[in-house]
Length: 84
Image (cartoon, rainbow, N blue to C red; front, side):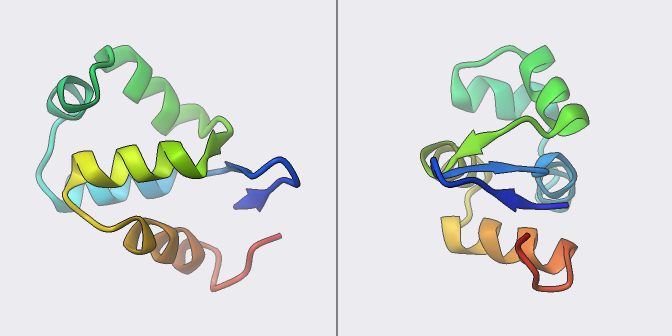
């Protein structure tokens, strides 16, 4: 489930991140390097789908080579176009 909170954070992005990363043929290690993070942080984000901000979506999108709007569109498609 994708949840947008009043403070502008999103929850439930782990599956979407993993799907987009695999579609681009990018490993967790490569994505982590592009973001200046550890591979374990990417793994945890994909697994737990912790809350992230729009700024984090922008950074992830940039590292994946896509527009933030594409990331958000993929989030919505995961939930049949519904943000709860």
